[in-house]
Image (tube, rainbow, N blue to C red; front, side, top):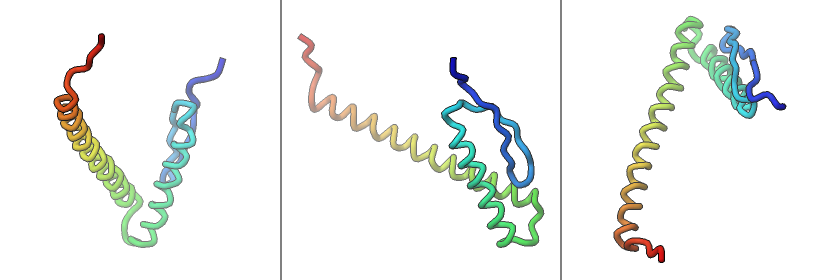
Length: 98
């Protein structure tokens, strides 16, 4: 029987983090780890006077901002699709099941 989850240790800005993730998402976790660490490295050069904690907070804000922007877009799109579906239902009329 295959294992559904896998235990991983990732490293974000020098801090090890233990995770248990669905087996099929481990590549996504590694990609996320790499993207965050790449951004951290870039920002260490760009903002040399920032402390590691400040950089980590800036990265947390950046990703949270992306998340909320995408969530807002998703909600708007879902609302618009529901409205379009309702209009189509009016145009098409009730389905004839018999």
